[in-house]
Amino acid sequence: MSEKIVFLDASTVDYGDIDFSSISKLGEFVSYPVTSPDDVIRRCSDATIVITNKVVIDKNILSQFPKLMLIAEAATGYNNIDIAESKNRDIVVANVPGYSTTTVAQLTLAFILALSTNLVKYNTAAHDGSWSSSDIFTLGTWPFFDLEGKTLAIMGMGAIGGEVARLCTAFRMNVVALKREESKSDGEYPRLNLFDLAKESDFISIHMPLTDYSRYLVNKEFLSHMKKSAYLINMARGPIVEPSALCRALEDGVIAGAAVDVMEKEPPSADDPLLKAPNLIVTPHIGWASIESRKRLVNEISENIKSFLAGTKRNVVN
Image 1 (cartoon, rainbow, N blue to C red):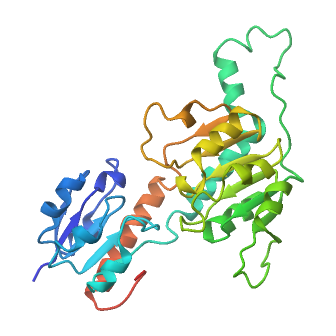
Image 2 (cartoon, rainbow, N blue to C red; image 1 turned 45 degrees about the vertical axis):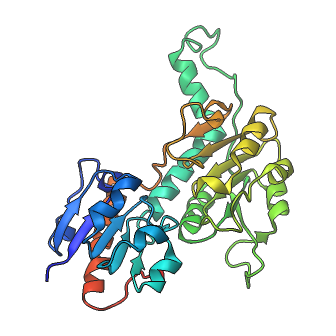
Image 3 (tube, helix red, strand yellow; image 1 turned 90 degrees about the horizontal axis):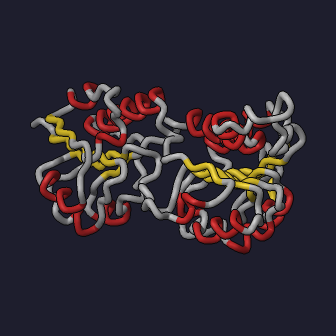
């Protein structure tokens, strides 16, 4: 019997440049660019395999899928799926770890370079006439600094955090990591507790999953411990940083600036206060989405499905 494979939000992966043939040859394949919550049950009622990136698959929805055997998460994070209920119903959930490591690290480094050089402000000044009206050959409106000797703190020293650390040591930065109680050793980099990390770092880059522990971990108290000259980068999940606290810290000059590739609500509303905050670079959750990364993602999804159909476990998270 041919499997019914449904991709609920294929446009999150395919921008007109992705080939899904490695998946479509595994069964009857139907893809939808996007799927609203009201359409999930209707579109998946007879599916044996569902692929989702951000579409929520909760307990109520799972109860409507009598044939479902596998949920293939088209991402590393899987907080859009009720993992416990999936396990209760013997539905396997498989994710795709590691496909975007180099891509996310690359954008993180771009943020560090842009913040340290005031790149966005100088680009604007070149285009708005400020440079043209300068009395000298250059502009020195916003001083910038070398990365050498500066301290980068990484919150979440997994594969992505480790790659960011490797890249930044090439700039002779000092790298430290967040110490968790369950950490048995420092590993390659010194580990600091939360507030010591905030106090001692020039850049803080977040690469940890969203959990009960990490939700709003970066809040008003944390930001108050940071140097006034320091910068915050969030490449992980929006709710790790309390948005109102970050907005106020930027407005009041508590920290020098920030860069985020994620927000608490995505897409954000047009009047989201963070979009108007000073000294903040915002990108629309693109850190994972290079063409190479998305091709790796689709290939890994197909490999997860093939392994499941062959009766073997691959990247199973429940």
